[in-house]
Image (cartoon, rainbow, N blue to C red; front, side, top):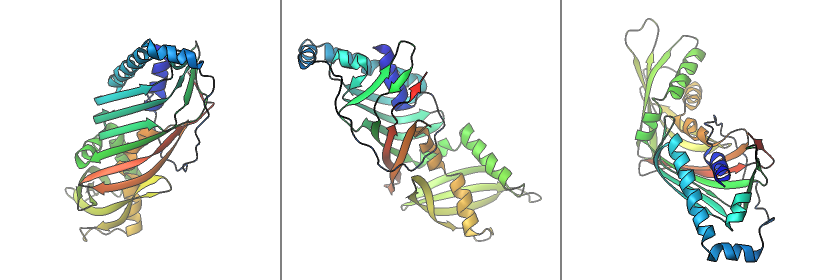
Length: 288
């Protein structure tokens, strides 16, 4: 059973530190009918003897322990099974993960919640640790980020590498030395410190923008240059800003090649950024 529970954790929390790329998949999923469950009397016996309750508690503790090995934060896990036997076979009712003050490889979230949508889910694991998602596993997620979360994320190695990439694309015309961000009046205020050849010191470029979901990606909208002395076309400015978009960068932690992710909503409220959507773990995918 321990291997199965770790397998569930790997699939739901993306245990393997995969690089994610947010893609629009639409909400195209359906819940599967229950199949292969142990007989009703067996499930009843598992329940009244307390075996099912004990199996759930052990599984939750194992999942939480493994999450703590790979991410900092305050996590709670809830797993509901039909019976101890069914859970061992990979069939379970629901899984819910809730986290606060999370740091996952330098990406910060004030809160992160994920929950299965369907009442029947099936993940198979053989003796060689090959995991198969027998049926699609749809989940719903929501994320909360603050300006502090984003500013800390923008100091991570991966984000710094992103800034280096955009500087290289600039052909040596400029180098982005650092970035910072503020959230105020339902807008993002983004500040770039840019070094330009033959110009002493760094130039501060300040912009304001709103947020929108476009084709499943989180994009800056209505980008406005606040310091008018820096000359750059608005379309070029929007392109650069969205390339180094720290929101999209952060949400990339929620998908890999074996899953479809659909960001549905992004909202700035009370100086916090709220994101929600769905992710579907695709069936017939075997992992080792």
